[in-house]
Image (cartoon, rainbow, N blue to C red; front, side, top):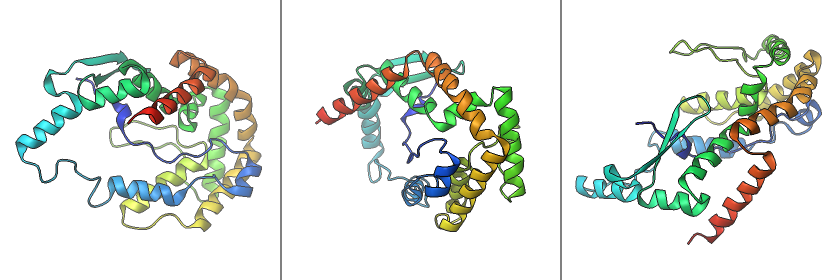
Length: 249
């Protein structure tokens, strides 16, 4: 059975693709301490709280059934953008909550899919499909490498090669996660400021900032077309969900 990728916790966010001047003035405008706290709550030695801790097997099974409807629950399946399938339960209090917040289970998939795509990371994936952008990004990666920051493509344990980074924020959040996983604290402010300064200089010297500004409006339109609605509709959707959330008791 396909699984729902969209029910995980939402990490702290930062405005995507700040200009070199903004990077020099205020860094990435990201709450590093909040990010560290979220990471440790979810991935620390004790992990997230276990809601069934102290329950008998029978009680834990009953809890699971109440949460998602159990094995007898109906499921909604929708095709994902990458050709896969997303499946979520209509049963239990989680199913009821999705309908209360989003209007339908299908809408909950659409909304969370959009929340995943309408981000700096989502736009980067699409930007890297453009040759002009890929060339500029590779030059930026070389520039950052010369400054001492390894931001280029990597191959994971399964042999899948990534595009690498095209903006220092992703590199730093990955660095922070690695550091926290080793029992160390959040990144030092000096490192964050140094990466932001190098990022700004490399974006200017390679022309990446200008290329991104040129291509990003079209990429945003492409993402919206794939999602099936205009960005103005997505913003309205966000406001509607927020108003529904305020009304939930």
